Amino acid sequence: MKFNLYTNVHAFYKDTFDILMRHEAQNMIMLGNVIIGNEGKDKYEWRDPANWLMATVTDDTRICLTALMTPPHKLALYTTDNLIDDVAISCLIEGISKTSFILPGVMTEKKLAERFVQIYNKEYEVEVEMRLFELLEVNPDIPTFGRLRHATESDLYFLPYWLENFHSEIYETAHEAPTDIEKYQHRIQRLYVLADESGIPVSIANVSREMPTACGIASVFTPPYFRGRGYASACVAMLSQQQLDKGFKSCVLYTDLANPTSNSIYMKIGYKPIADSLDIKFVVG
Image 1 (cartoon, rainbow, N blue to C red):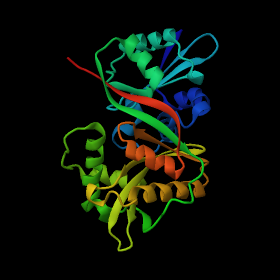
Image 2 (image 1 turned 90 degrees about the vertical axis):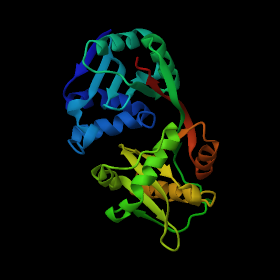
Image 3 (image 1 turned 90 degrees about the horizontal axis):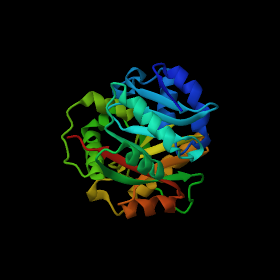
């Protein structure tokens, strides 16, 4: 096995794109980033490929394992055709250890994540157990109401607080008051707001990744005082249908398995589970 470290995102794209597309929905995070990096777009914050860890492990004939990390985020992995190879994982770990990159964690398909941390042999914590869902058709019986619109700068009076609350609920961390307005100005480019009949914002969702035939939906959040009224279902259903109408064949999203309510909501909309994943943090010290 051979460890291959890339410094050119175009070369990495050329070598890995077709392989990642074998499981397009599963590889949503890596594909979305690699596509943007190859196009030279969206270099804001962590999205600049100059700072990325891009690597593959090959045998004599093919790529066996693909790895991408966009610091400060965790390492994303794909073992070709989901065939887990301990030798390839060991080769990757050894190769990364000789670089300046520090692994904060790993986020990938559950069996691969479990095998990686066993071989890596570092103390770790599972931050989130996730399920990956894919939708091909929106259930027409889901009630929709209000108006789904693209977020604008005028929404920044509430959006930073909603986004921070979303993150704190997922990772069970303390809510942080938003301070960097530029960060949120950038995020509204892909954010959508559901407003009720009176025009009051009641729920949000984000188009996180755009791939050749699929798109990712993320950051679905309804404030506690608006929950239980079907707003999240309507928001996700309307946004998913909008993306299908644009020409995407499917929509993909992750859910927190600890939240049975959201999992139930998405399945009613038409999302079907296709894989389980783990978001793992390595313990430092």
